[in-house]
Structure formats: C-alpha cells, structure tokens
Image 1 (cartoon, rainbow, N blue to C red):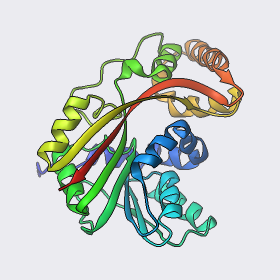
Image 2 (tube, one colour):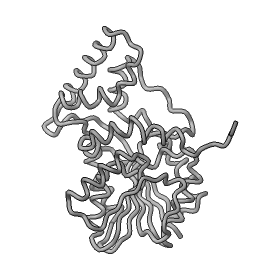
Image 3 (cartoon, rainbow, N blue to C red):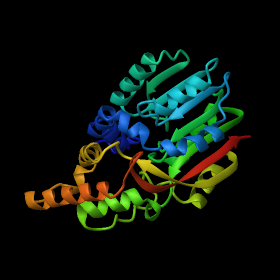
Length: 278
C-alpha cells in the first residue's frame, strides 16, 4: 500500500466537492460578504492598466473581475481548487465582456506559474495550504523582482462576531479553538506567525494591518437564514428534529437582531497583509 502523501488532499476533496459546489451555487452572496473590506484592499493592490495579476483561491472570481477591469491592458489569472467555482467564474467574466482575464483549476501550492506577475492577490483564499512554506515559496517564484503580495486573512476567532454568533445560535457553545498549524480560515490569523512564514519563504517588506469592518450575509433575514442554514448545516448533524428546529429558530432570531438598511451585518476583523519580492 502506498504511503505517499497527496498534497492538499483534504482541501481538494472539500473545495472540488460539495463545499465548492455550495459556494458556486451561492456565488452572489459569498462575493458580497467582504464588501466593506474592498476599498482598503484595492488601495493596497494598486493594480495598474498594464499589470499582470495572479489571484489565489479566486472562488467565483469576484475580485479577479475587479482586477481585470483595472488591468485592462494587462492580464489576470484566477486559480482555485474548485472546478464548479472556476466554471462560474468563467461564465461571469464572459458576461461582463472582460478580455484580459483567465481562470484555471489549479493547486497554487504546486502549480508551475509564470514568473512575471506584478501583483499576487488573495481575499481569504491563502489560508488552506497543508504545507504553507512550500506554497508561499511557490507563490514567491510567480512574482517578478519588486512584485507585490496582497492578502486579506481573518483575524483571531474571538474577534469575529459572525462566527461566535452563528456557532452559539446553532450549537449553544462558543467556537472551539482552531487546531494549531492546521489549514483553515484562521491559519494566518496571528501576524507574528504570518510575518515569520513570509520572511522564511523569501518575502520582504512584510506588513500586517488590522482592519475592522462588518460582513454581510444577505439582504433579508429570510435570504441570510437560507444561506447560512446550508453553509453551516454540518453543525446540526445528528441532532434530533426538535433540537435542530430550535437551533434554526435561534439562528433566525440572531439574524433578525442584526438586520440593517444595508443587509444582515456582523462585526469582523481581518489582516491586510502586504509584502514584496526582492
């Protein structure tokens, strides 16, 4: 029996399976979640018309399309592990008539990228590598000398009102501590760890800026409830019907308490991570 480890096997199974399919089917909601982080991210990315841009973990291409509109004389490549999301990304880009954009289903930890990108971007998509050192060394090689890395990564779980509110409503408990070093949403939540990771893989001029904005999960309570019930339904696996119904009622009440004129919003915190290749 072979004991060879397949890189990113668990992440590939999730993102190129049911999880990725759910994201693809609900792309309009997922692409809106980070709307208030967009201005700061745009300023840091500073994409110019001639730039070549690489978007890691691009999902359905929300930011890839923004980058392509800015780099209208350059080229933008978005990559993701999910075939379904890449298919949606291609369709949406074609609908907008974007000509400088391309999508590829690829594992950024291993993929042999060209080495002449001006800007490498990722919005909450760079935290899922099972070998972050190998991944960021590979990503460094995709940048030209002087090229820039711009990431948005989640801050610690305790700073995420959305995570704590959803978990408490559905399970009656606070979220468990993430496993140290495990790939997942909070693997780059410690700026000391992130800075050390980027430094030892060859990046320079590393900076982590603390951002605090609200995130949005739908325009109405009904829309948000349907969305989050599907996204987080795994939290209710094995529950008796009465307990499940009570948990979903608690989620609805939590969402109603956070309804605003601009959608269902919860507080959040993220790191804007920037670095360069020497």
